[in-house]
Every structure is written in C-alpha cells, then in structure tokens.
Amino acid sequence: MDIELSFIWAIIIAFAVLTYVMLDGFDLGIGILFPFADSEQDKSVMMNSIAPVWDGNETWLVLGGGGLFAVFPLAYAVIMPALYMPITLMLLALIFRGVAFEYRWRTVSWKPVWDAAFFGGSIVAAFTQGIALGAMVQGIKVVDRAYAGGWWDWLTPFSILTGFAVIVGYGLLGSTWLILKTEGELQSKMRGYAKWLGIGTLGFLGLVSILTPFQDAAYFQRWFSLPGSIFSVLVPSLVGLCTWLLFTGLKNKKEIQPFLASLSLFILSFIGIVISFYPNIVPPSLTIVEAAAPDSSLKFTLAGTIFLVPLILIYTAYSYWVFRGKVNPDEGYH
Image (cartoon, rainbow, N blue to C red; front, side, top):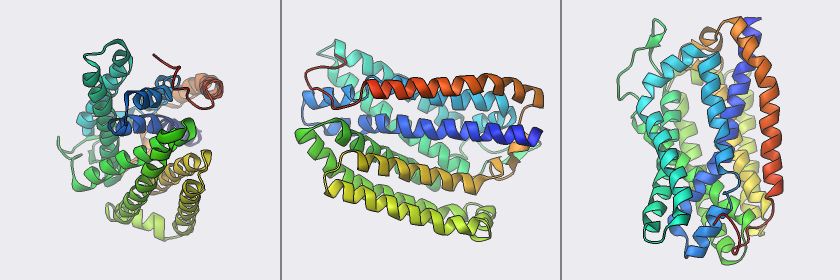
C-alpha cells in the first residue's frame, strides 16, 4: 500500500509543478517582455492581461512545495540544502515582482523603479527555476539519507544553460498569451517576438535534450532501452507536431493555437524529465518510495487533497472564464 500511495502522491506533486510552470510561466513571460513595450499603454495592457490571475497561478507553487514537505519529507530535506540559494533567490524575486505589480499603479515618479523590479523579479525567478531544474537533472549527492554535496554544486554550465532555456521558454509563453489577449500593434509585435522566441526555445530544448543523457548513465538506459525507447521516438515526434502548430499558427495569424502549442512544448518537456527521473524523486539515487512519509500521513493528507485540488481547479477555470476575451486598453487593474 505504501508504494501505491507514494506513487499517487508523486503524480499529484508532478501535476502541481507542471500546472505552476504552465500558468505562472506565461505571466513571468509578461515580465520578461515588459521592457520591450513601446508605450505606457502597452505596459498597462500587458499587466492587465494577467492582473486577474497572476497571484492565483502561484497557488500551485505553494501546493507543490508544501506537498513535497508533507508527503516526501526526505526529498524536501535533501533538495532544500542542495538548492537553498536558487530557491531563496526565486522566492525573493517573486516577492519583489508581486510588490512591483501593486505599487507601479500608485506612483508616477517611482514607476520606472517598479517597472525595473517587475522585469528583474520575473527574469530572476525564471532563471533560478531553470537553475534548480538543471541541478536536479544533473543529480544531487545523497549519503546516509542526507545531502552530501557542496554549497555551489547547483551552479554548473548545464544548470546555467537550463536557466537561460527557461527564460526564453517563458518569454515564448508570454508572447503567445499576449497574441491571445491583445489586438493591433501590440499583438502584431508579439507575433514577431513569438517567432524568434519559438526558434530559441526549440534550440535550447534540443541542446538540453542532447546533454541530459550524459548527466547520468541511468538516463541513457531509460531512454534507449525498452520501454523508454518508445518514448525516444514518440516524444520528439510530438514536439515536431507542436512546432508545426506553433509556426503555422503564427503564420496564419491564429490567436489561441500558438499559445496551446507553446504550452504543449512545456508539457512534453516535463514528460521527458519524468521519464528520465522515474522511479527517483531526487536523482540519481533517492526513490519515490524511500522519500515518502509513513503510510498514515499519506492517507491523511490525501483525504484533504482529494477535496482541495478539484476546488482549486474549479476556481482557476472559473477565473479564466470570467476574464476571457481581449484586454480593453481603457479598463483594467489601474
């Protein structure tokens, strides 16, 4: 029963992390693109496009981190000291970004400062998330159920590469979101940005995919022996399909198709990471079963989560439905 419950919880945590990346990814992308707005009105429209949902998007980060602490305490105890610096910087960046979001509407003389904070918080949050991902992929050293690596083990050329990959990928999500939510010159400009950000995202995705199997011999085995070799053909094929949908959508001036194609690229990338990691929750050696809390704790927390997660999903879907459609430049958060 332990194995079954820990597996269920691993799916829940993975779902929360993926949902956070998809939802908060595009609003971090708005911040990354913020300095490229041509006018104060364009900046207002960009911020108003995410104003009703940005703080709700971060609910999934809380669920993922809190869930990890509650049901995989050993994994949490290993990951936190290994990634203490990038995680701390990410949280500080998200705080600065949130404060800037609120205060830029309430000042004139300080608005450039808060604009810079919004951009800086967004890009630092994206970069540190990519750094953390790269550090996880390259593996965390565990000895006697504790972190045994150094203070700077997370900072490597590979983790820096994944950091920049996430920045570009979030920029793609942000640009395609603005194609969906805006009109006129801003929409046209974002369509042009999305083309180049799409090329950059695919370039980084290809480079990271090539380098990942070399981070650990187990990754090679999972991807190039059955049943993993099936995914070695299937996942790149689906990436190719999403690429076609992205660029044809941009060329034909579709609005929702590029955004959905961009989200699908992130989903496929996440599936690739899951295939590389499984059955470990902290590669290369800490498995899902080993890191799980006692069976009684898993049952207790699962009972509440079965009620909570659908409630959050319903609220999230309702908020997006209520604020569907184009952003009116003359109305919004301010």
